[in-house]
Length: 115
Image (cartoon, rainbow, N blue to C red):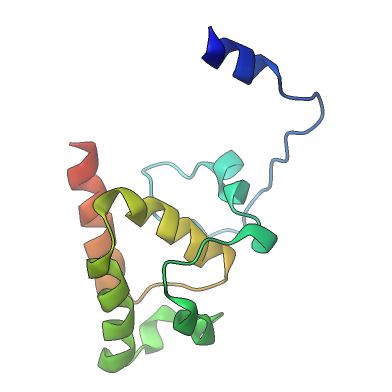
């Protein structure tokens, strides 16, 4: 009953569907959930004690050095598995793309969680 009340209490016209640019899916899910991408708009970005990663905004993931990739990995291994999806969305909202190997590690965590 409470869930029904909460879901029906949304104000009409407050749905903000945003189409992400092609190729900007965070990879946290099999099919990009475009409506959920704005769950953490820029003014409400969630940090996971990873503010230092902001220096990688708009950096091409193929150009990360092993040391830079390790910075991402250190954050990843310190969080709970249930936080990984939110972290990926937070990075995406901040314009930060994961190094390819760390992205695969994060996606494997998500796959295990869903299994």
